Length: 224
Length: 224
Image (cartoon, rainbow over all chains, first blue to last red; front, side, top):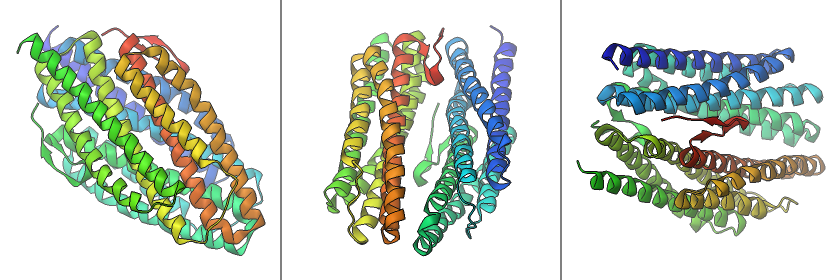
């Protein structure tokens, strides 16, 4: 096995991971169309994409396994393969969350229409930006950009906390709105989890580029 | 590096992962004490354990990285290291969920006492059994046992769906119970996610033992 073939394999893994990422991002965007614009045809697009995401996940894990088994990558390349395995798993979960949002949008569309003072589109925009920037950081090997993603997570957490308190207030005033309010609460919670996955991905990019483990507020040098 | 040292390293990784698992299980059990028995001193135990879990997660990833970099494991050993990396991440998330449950238990204790016809202890028991059996399967290299864990997930999903509908009914009858009901809903949802993590772990054990990828209802032979 030549080094050229090794680098081609690494490049194929990177490309496949970026395709997977594009797919996860599109799926989330379909789910948000279903919710924010009431476009329920978007739900079937979410279902189709989710099946593809699951297939991509298996393929990427297989590519990573083959690389480890046949090429024994070292140092930064080994860290990239491990980061790819983790990012792959986070992207699959973003797909799951998109599916959850689509199902909740379907339920919401079937219940009485309610207006709540919760800015889901703004929250969605921020979570999607975090996903997009983590992937940009992956493409550009940009640990600085990835670090900025980490700082965005607190804002989404805060929006989720506020949504919970506002929606509780709404239910207290009108118990018949409870079902819709709770579905919205779960959509808000799903977006908050998507932001968590983007945070995980950003940490994995930093680990790959710098060899530093930044999880849980620590920074350990990693020797590989 | 001799083969004996290689097997010692693999064994250390396995032991550390089982310790991490024991810690995650204990943390969940503290969180459930906080919720089910109103024992709020258990919340501080959850916090202490969660910090340890985060440290263990970094250590285990480092052990796995060292093994891959220095020993280049093959076939079943390589699959074990990859399964360990994934199980490690699932156990860390079980710790996160335990933390979520402890925080919700604290909030619930601060609000008016309510009785809801939702069997959280039964749901907790089932999710804990799934975690325990996945780990038993890991210890015994028992893919059969891991397969049985996969079948248990539907029951927990169904309990979570039922909890949602019962709690909505309770809120419709008494809006002042909304905050407590919603906290309980999130505890139910956290237990359902813990069952998902146990399912992931069981799939990883099957992948390790049999070399088959059973995620998303598929079974692909894996060559390493």
